Length: 268
Image 1: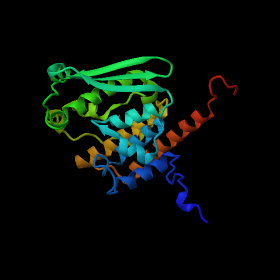
Image 2: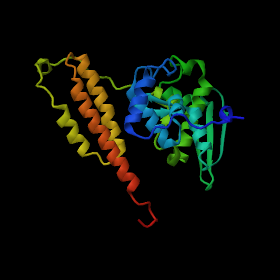
Image 3: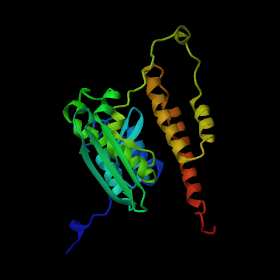
Image 4: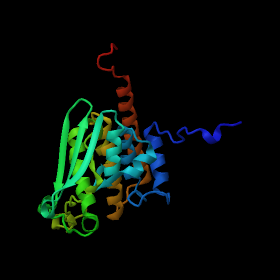
């Protein structure tokens, strides 16, 4: 009898930049994508790349990583799952204590090496941060939001090697976006000279020391294309493809160098 129905091998396996680019464009048009990723292939690329560094499969990354105000973050439940599944966590305990403004959520995270970190967040803390009573989850699910803040603080401090700098999505949502002044200034109303995007990005890529830098250039390139379109000065497809190919080649070269580099402690 065939084992086809009981086999659970991964169907989607992304191994190159071009494969990731193709997947992101396809996924962005899918009705199955979360609304934050719908029509945004650049956000999908960042999420999948971050997920791969955390050990998440592409679809797991899309479901659990959010790009909020341009910053990747991970939802609180996924953050706890990553920590518990890392093999470095001895225990995580969460509870509430106090009343009124002194009501606070507490999270105690302990590593298997014995280190223990406590994070807490109270109603008083939420009021000082102008979060308490804020429209949305802070009004509807106050205790849950307190819990996510305490959890985020404790897990980030106890397991930076697992979370790699990611903050919780719940915390990222409360960080105000920096206002952008779009009022045209007299000097900006003049016709700007054409930009040589190929030369510009070639120079930037030559200075990239690692894959993370190349990925940031890709995100910047997507923003450049969108802004040029909005300004009525679309970038030609030939230039877009040329810059895309440069970024892909640079990323593959750095990936190759990283793979060939000797591991610490192991003779080359």
